[in-house]
Image 1: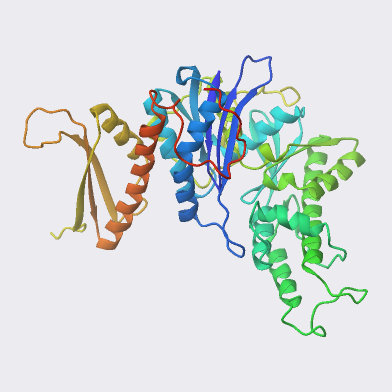
Image 2 (image 1 turned 120 degrees about the horizontal axis):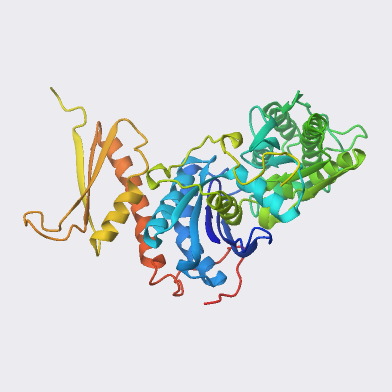
Length: 358
Length: 116
């Protein structure tokens, strides 16, 4: 079976076409297109402008995807779109296109949970057996484990997502948003030398990032070049603290927190594998820190590359097709979008009841 | 009793066929109005409303709102959605989807050779 997937919950518009040739064979990616809306440095992306971007790009990306995949409309089984969670206006702008396509082509329309899309794509690409999933992006931060036909949330961010913390700090430092603020922070952090004290806010199985962001913003003001050298923040060895040092310190702090809450879930569930999904999962330092922890526990880390960890349409097509193959149908009247959509709201009919098997 | 929604606007969107008008109606009517200060209803009508017969290929949308500002915001948003519906119909319907597109793909990731 073949599915078309449309993703637009944040600033990336993704269109993917996936094929499930048979239950025993791996899925085939026929097209995976994406266009990102970047705001100028110092600004975040707003819902209205993001929706405008998605409306401008959805038609041409779907057309290009169909032509690249070389599929015919009659070969397609269903149209999948992101039902949520995410930003309202961008979600709706993509859902409108999905509904129209489903009606014109006479196909079933499947609404997909964005988080489930990330998880299922991560499982398909890495073949991780039954890992703890760390889902980290600009909009979400959750520690997830599969149990009895639901992806259960074991821990999460209490206030804002870790990627949101990083993105907003990038705005404070006026770091460019192209290709992504988090990517630019990661590159700058590699040049950082001094670890500056920041609050560390793990609360049991959960984590909190807003206080750390506030503390980081205060530090950023203290390294401003407008200040005299005498007033600027210095490290223990007397050197002036740089933007790179702050990026490095922020990453080390928040990533250590993520490693801790992931490890706590691993101990709770008795799992040794970690699958990292979501845009922040592209960060190589996070992967490295997680791998050190997993190795200590006799396990390993699974991660995908930027084609799949950053928001994309193929994960929506994949997760939607998995649901469609179990016989799920959704009437068009219910093809709404919702900003709040918990990962454990979805009944994972396509996996076995038993935790250990697929 | 005073009308609580005095600011009204009726739109007529003609489509090439009744089927396309119905598709537009079904796609656009799923989303509820965001504000309780705006009400909206859809129906299909014939182009010449005085005639008894006639293909119902016109989507009639009736808005009423508490203020002109709410009306304007709602209708502008609606037109943006209509733009997407029409774009999909024009470029992606079954008879035209395989044809090359006219819009630039600059900056898109995942571009490969087309197979068509």
